[in-house]
Length: 541
Image (cartoon, one colour):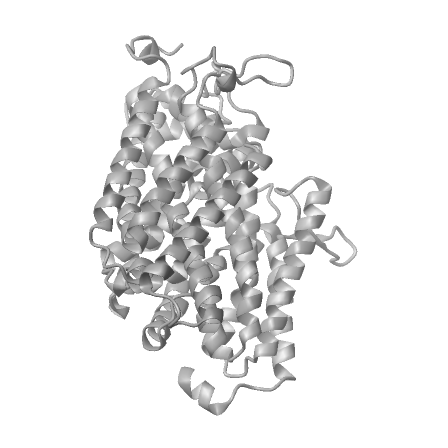
C-alpha cells in the first residue's frame, strides 16, 4: 500500500466516493438553478433562446467535443500504441474542428436564424425540398449518436470503479476477479461499473430534463473548467511522483527516457493509416448535438472565440492524457498493484490517478474525468430529444397542434427512452469494450456524411436524390465495414487493404472508404437527377 494511503484516515475508496457524490450534487444544483430561468417555451428549452455569448459558446462546444474518448480513450490507446496517438487525433482535430466551425457552423447558424431551424434534418429537408430525406436521416443520426453515448456511459462506470477500489471488498457485487479466480487489486472492491454508469445517467438526465439547453450550457462551462484545471494539476502530480526528480521538466525528461522505443515514436505506424485518420475529425461537421449548440449563439461574432481557442484547448487536454498513457509502458511505472492489461486499457488513467496521487486529489480528478464525460452526454441526450420532437412529432402532426409545454414534454420523454436504451446496451457490451474503438467507429459514421453537408452549403448542383444516395452509401459502407470488423473480432485494429503495385497492400482507416463512397454517390447521382428549383436555390445562395 502506498504511504499516502496508509496515512489516510479514510477507508480506501471512501473519500473519492464522497468527493464524486458532492460534485454530482453541485452539478444537480447548478442544473436546477438554471431551470429557474427557463421561460417554458420550446425555443428556450432547445436553444436557450439564442442567447449564448462567445465565452459560453466556446466552453459548451469544447466541452461537448471533449469526451471520455479524449481522456479515458486517448490514455488507453496511447498505452497500447504509443505517442503517435496524439498525431492521429489531437493535432489534426485542433485544425479541422476550427475549420468546420468557420466553414459550416457560421453558415448553418445564419440559415437557421433566418429560417427557424433547430436541427440538421430541418435544414436538409428545406434545402432539398424532400420529406423522405428527413425520415431517412432520423434513425441514422440517432443510431450514430448511441455509440457516442456508450463511450461516456461505459467510461463513467470504469472510472468510478477504479477510483473507489477497496471500498467494499467483502461485498459480492464489488468484487473483481480475473479468469483464474485471482483478485484484481486495481478494481477490487470498487463501485461496480453498472452502478456507477447508472448514477451518471440519472444525474445527467435530471439536469437536462429540468434545465434544457441553458442548463446544459452552464453545466458544460462549469465542467470544462473543472476537468481542464484538475487535469493539468494531476498531470503535474503524476509526473512528479513517477519521475522523482527535483524539477518538472527534469521529470518529463526522465519519464520520456523510460518509455520503450516502440512507444515513443510513431515509426511503427503505417503512414497511410496515420494520414487517413485525418478524415475522422470531419465528424464534427455532422454532429447533431454540435449543430444544436451552434444554434444557441447570440450572433455570428460569437464564433470567433471558439475558432481561435479550440485548438489550444485540445492541446491542453490531449497532451497530458497521451503522455500519461505512454508513461504507463515505461520502466518507472509502479509494480504494485499490477497495472491494467492491454484488454482493460480503459482503466489506465484512473489506475495511475489511484496509485500516484493522494485520495483527496484522486477524488477531485475523478470528478474532473466525470465532468468531461457528462459534458458530452448532456448535449447528446438533449439533441436527440429535440430531433424527435421537431422532426417527427411536429413535422408529421403539425406545428400548431401542440403547445410549447407539450412539446417540451415530448422532448423529455424521448430523452428518458434513449438514456434507458443506452444504459441497457452498455450492460450488454460490458467494460471490456475499447472506448477508443467505439469512438472511432462512431466518428467514422458522421465523417462519412460530411460530403453531404458541404455540398448542401456550397454546391448549387446538389439534388435530393444525390443526398439520399449519399446517405445510403454512407450508412451502407459503415454497416458493411463494421460487420466485417466484428467478424474478425477486431474493432480497434480493422483496416482496409488496397492493392498497391506488386508489394504489400496499402492499409487505410475504414473511414476513408466510407467518405469516398458517400462523395461518389452524392456527386454522380446529383449530376444526372433533377436540380432544385431556382426559387429554392435563391433562398440559400
